[in-house]
Length: 204
Image 1 (cartoon, rainbow, N blue to C red):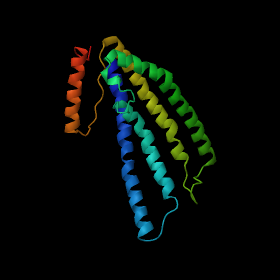
Image 2: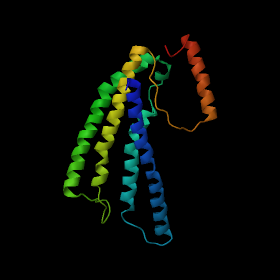
Image 3: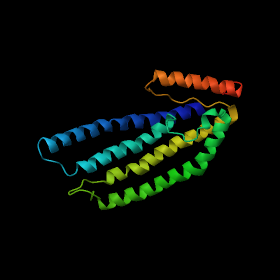
Image 4: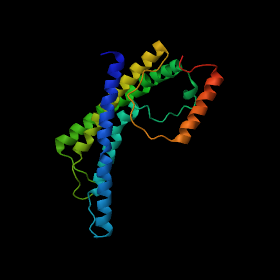
């Protein structure tokens, strides 16, 4: 399997996990609607629903991290990034991945493993509400999510190296996305303006 094949395989893992985790939003919506009905119609609120809502949303949020990175959908704060040539983008990304990403995610995996193992050892339950539900399975999601994000991060680092060598970003395993016609047209106009300003093709 070539480098592109490995990158797409990792993208595929992140995408599958992200799509699987997305179904938790259905469970979360159902739990919230049921609790609203019980609380305001039947006057019989459930104490542990708050904990369950947090765990469902937290699990979805954590497991979607690698998928978001695979789709290059995380928000970038640097407004100059989009005007850079691919090699400059790759160099900047590579430095940031090595200096910030790898240490940060490694810390998440390590600390998440400690939290999860201790929680499993004592059979931890939530103390936020009376008769709180178990939380050890929720805390186990922290190291799992960290490992998935780290795996996808390794793929992104490889992409940076390939781009530095070839001058072009390797392709990604694309997923379906909503298309905003106005936004797409604005992007095309902005892209054309940048190319005119830089005097050529941004892909070289």
